[in-house]
View 1 (cartoon, rainbow, N blue to C red):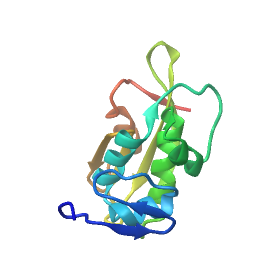
View 2: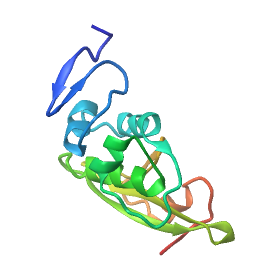
View 3: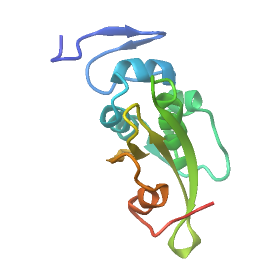
Length: 146
């Protein structure tokens, strides 16, 4: 055993302690108990950042491969959160300074709070917070949603 996590079987992935490899958003949702902090931590630890160009891979491909860009991280976050009761997540594409493009997952949780997952970065906001305020809080902005 290794602390709180121990060993569990999560669908088709044998999970050991720490940020274990996962094969699907379903397995990641179960492994993290749908905790936003744990989901973003897993993404930051297990999806190595590498530029991909215009390709949009599925969450399962990104997770199995273990690398990708912001689109991969956002897709994994969205697909994982959408498997959690009461969560609604989507990927937004943002244009930032010097016309750079970036993708993140934004979501509403079961308590009505809004937030984002930006690879390992994440933040929750009170219910009723404007989406524009959530987006502008993402580091690297100011952002315009496309």
